[in-house]
Amino acid sequence: MAFSRLLAAALVAGLGLLPEVEPPVPAWGWPLPPPHTVTRPFEAPPTPYAAGHRGVDLAAGSGDPVYAPADGVVSFAGVVVDRPVLSITHAGNLVSSIEPVTASVAEGAHVAAGQQVGQVGTGAHCAGGCIHFSVRLHGRYVSPLLYLGGVARAVLLPLGDGGSPWPSWSGPRVRGPVGLLEPFG
Image (tube, rainbow, N blue to C red; front, top):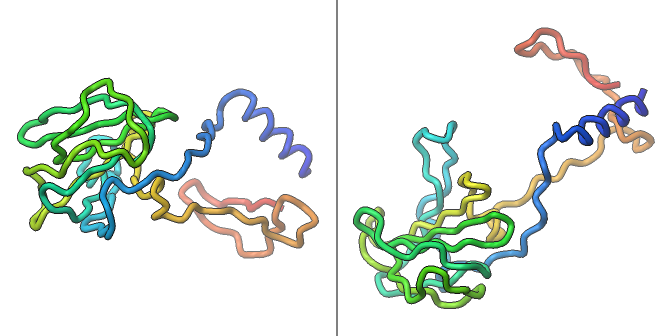
C-alpha cells in the first residue's frame, strides 16, 4: 500500500502537478541600520486585489541611510504618486521595494548587499517616520521577514513508529466539507 502511494506521488510530480520548490535564497540584510523595529507587520490579503499590508513598516527617521537587502539590479528609482520609491530585482525572480527612499543609485545600476542605495525620504504613510519594505516573488507579495530571518520556516516531521514514512492513524474519523474523510493507514 505504501509503495502505491509513493508511486502515485512520483507520477503526480512527474506530470508537473505539484508546485515547483524555490531554490534556497541566501539570507538578506536589513535595509536600515539597527535597531530594527517593525511598526506594522506583513498582512497577506485573502485575494490578490483585497485589502492587506503587502510589506512591513520599519521605524526610520528622515535622512537615515537605506541599504540594498541583497545583490541585484535597480529596476526603478523614482516617484510614485507622492513618494520616492526604490525597487531592486534580485536572483530567484524576487523584487524588493522600499519607500520613501531618495535614491543615490540610478535605474540599471548593479548593487551589492549592504550597499547604501539612498536615504529615507518624506511621504511615509506611518506617523513618526518609517519605511515600507516589500518583497514580491514571481509577482506575488510575500513577507520580507522570510528573507531577513524573522519568520521560522515550518518543518514537517514524520509521525508513527518510525518504521514507515506514512503515519498510522488511530484517531477518530473527521467530518470535512466533502463528507467523511478516511485518514492514511
